[in-house]
Length: 375
Image (cartoon, rainbow, N blue to C red; front, side, top):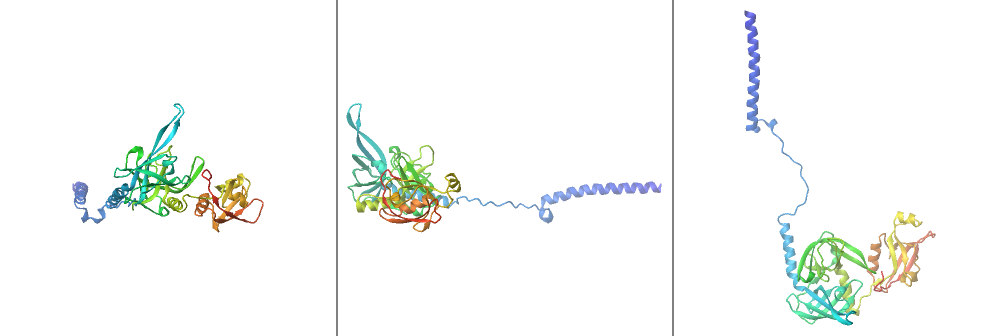
């Protein structure tokens, strides 16, 4: 009897402990969820990984927008529409008839000097310029440069709103720009974008345009000759063309190129670009192996134009130019940029490696005047 009582007591104790554990667990869980701070070890960390993505702040976005609006309000007053007319022969009717072209321009002097593209007024017999006020004036071409596609047109007006030519050498890839023009006759159309690339050399037909600005701001037919403007309201380029087989590829003549043309036309009535007369390519190890030449970092001469300053100075096909005026060059664009910083008639000194000659050779070249169709 006593042994049975003892066994019952043990069973009851075990059951009590089990029930107590269950009740305690339920009660403890309730307390943790109701007030985790009383059990510090039960608190859950909520730390998350921090990202470094850059997003325009609420202050930056309006400031860019306001800058664009201000630029448009100021510069648009200087943008003009240009309608050029030339007489062409209709061979079917055996008579001449007028053919019109539409473009844009920008006033750069209050006395009516207008900067535009050469192709906008090329071979024109008559030029009409429409101001932002709506007034139409007769335009007279006072100078052109087909090589850079720049032209100057004069109208007989005074006290006009003029835009300022900026310093395109200070441009950075990614910088905001605004294009203003008259595409398809839609006056003072504004598009925005960024500088996509600088110092492009673009082949067009039988000529090369050097130091071109590339932008993704939309440039359409009729925009040619209009300004590409930075957010300070300065002209950094003159819109000239688009790449028709792609979207977002527009090109502009740099403001610095325009300044050279303007200064030369004012002084001499024409623009003369320096000319050396060679075709170049950047030298690579693969190219050296292909043409059986020793690899030297530099620029390979792949063609020498007959009668050119280069031929007269003794440059030969296969020469590898390693420096110009003491400055090392290993990219053809760098070389051409230095050449174009000179004037026709200037002398330059080249250092080159020639096949089968162990030592470097030096060549002095007097730069000529670039013909319209030459590269």
